[in-house]
Amino acid sequence: MSPARPLTALRALAVTAALPLLLTACGYGSQANDDEQAPVAAGAEKLSADTVRIGYFPNLTHATALVGVEKGIFQKELGGTAIKASTFNAGPSEIEALNSGSIDIGWIGPSPAINGYTKSGGQNLRIISGSASGGVKLVVNPDKIKTTGDLQGKRIATPQLGNTQDVAFLNWIAEQGWKVDAQSGKGDVSVVRTDNKITPDAYRSGSVDGAWVPEPTASKLVAEGAKVLLDEADLWPDGKFVITNVIVRQDFLKEHPDVVEAVLRGSVKTNAYINAHPDEAKAAANKALEKESGKALPAEVIAPAWKSVTFLDDPLAATLDAQAQHAVQAGLLAEPDLSGIYDLTLLNEVLKAEGEPEADDAGLGVK
Image 1 (cartoon, helix red, strand yellow):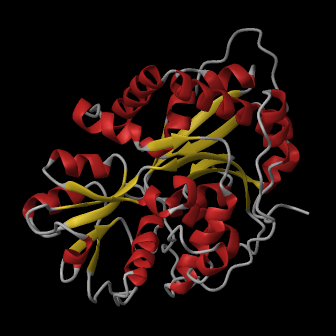
Image 2 (cartoon, rainbow, N blue to C red; image 1 turned 45 degrees about the vertical axis):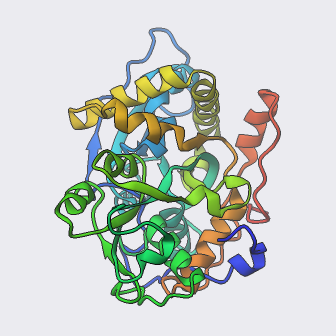
């Protein structure tokens, strides 16, 4: 994952198909919450489906969905087709909902997307767009850890065994020349799998000395006195790596391409709005989070967290391939066949209409 390594070297890492909950996204549990269906404007023309059901996490790395729903951008593109949103707290539950037909389109991290695709033999989903990059940091207790070398012998939290951040941390540990058993987390550094929602309490109590976590958990820890030791973006070429994709059920894509295209237009326009109006978008995302949790993020948490996430439509496909290989090398995934995981046809039509350059699938698109 070091920028000094070519992609072929990066490809030597990845995630075991034997663990059903292994490759989860960076969420806060496993339950889904059904939101109210968004109101449809009277007289608006309906597309080929009455309703499109979307899923995402109440995380800042999923702010494209948070802001797009909150500001009505998706609904405007869908016209008379209603949008129904559900929030999820972990990747497996969202993949399960996609497989069961409970949702049609979802925002999700790279590891559960890889796992969902490979476990179904490439039959259940496609990645149709990117959404966000970055937003992951290694934060530590500055009284115990001042340099990366001080991590030896310390206890560092990751969200879950085999999740996106867990795989990244295991890969980084290996690059330092240290040894850790991926399954148990025991070794030169103790990797402690801890639910993001309780990681701040674990840090406060001293049961962990730091964490490799996504936003806003990283900034919550900083608010508790932790310091940022490393931003994962610094480990990637150009500082970009996929943290959130947009996925779709393959049968829904086949049956309702007009609806999928409308959602993608909404996603592209939402990202443009976020980048053009960051303060307003941040407020909209926080308002959506408050609806989900009953409590908005304080300014000292959301301000730095928001700055560390980049919102973009490019799926950064080469970095997803590298992340899969990181998991393989860690012994958490059998060598995956990711050919066909992307279908960027509709995204590129939307981008062309918006005067933007096309996105690349790194050779992993449908043929």
